Image 1 (cartoon, rainbow, N blue to C red):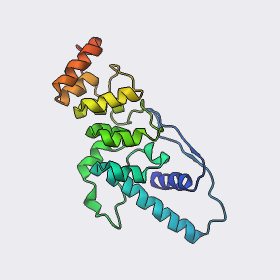
Image 2 (cartoon, one colour):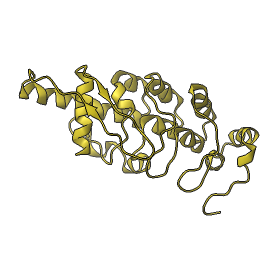
Image 3 (tube, rainbow, N blue to C red):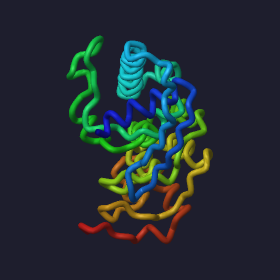
Length: 212
C-alpha cells in the first residue's frame, strides 16, 4: 500500500540507504528503495519501523502546529518530498483528532513546502527549503497548484518573496480551476501583493478563471 511504501522509503533513509525518486505534476512518485540489510532481525526491524512512524507523525504534527523548531528536529530529506496522505497515524502520544480533518482535506496530496506556503508560514518554509530537496514546480494532482500559488492564496507577501528568492519562477500558469497567481492573491486579500503582481505580470491582469 501507499502507507507501506512511505515507511519503506523513510526506513531506508534513516538507515543510510540510498533512496531516489522524483515528483512530477502528472504522476505519483515511484520510489526505488534500496534493500535493507538481511542482518537486521525482525524485532529490530519492527522497532525501527515504529520509530519511523513516530517521526512521521511528529513531522506532520509540527507542520500542522507551525512549529518550525520541531520541524527542524524531525526533518529528513525524504520527508520533504512526501505528499500529505489522506490520514496520518496519530496513535500513541497524539489523539486521533490532533490533525483536524479540514486541514487534511485542504492539503491532501501536497508537499510540505506547499502546505507551509499555503499557511503563509515563512519560518516553516525556511526550514523545509534548507533541506535543498524541494521541487518548486511540483503541482498537486487534485488542483494543479504550485507552491507559489499556495503562497499567493495565503495572502503572505513574505512567503511569495521567499519562494521567488529561492528559485521559483513568477508566471501566469493556471491551476485546474483556471486561476493564476493573480486570482490567488486577490483571494488572499492582500492589496499590496495584488498590486505588485499586476506590475510584474501585466499580461495576466485580464485573465478569467473557468467560472468568470
